[in-house]
Length: 89
Image (cartoon, rainbow, N blue to C red; front, top):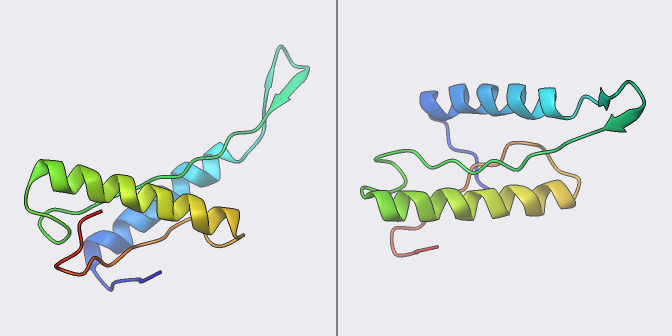
């Protein structure tokens, strides 16, 4: 896991934390059935992570799976991945 110091990613992190924080609160259907959700969110930032839509989407997908892995390991909700220039997800 790599955390990059980037103002946009700091703001994105806050938005992602708000979304996931809201989803983890249980809610009720018909006042009887408790439901609890979770989310794994993958984000890529243009042009830092990719310069074309297809690669940008692929990297967001890759980031989502990395977030799922970290969540399964009991880690944080927000994970930023640094991509080596030669690596394609």
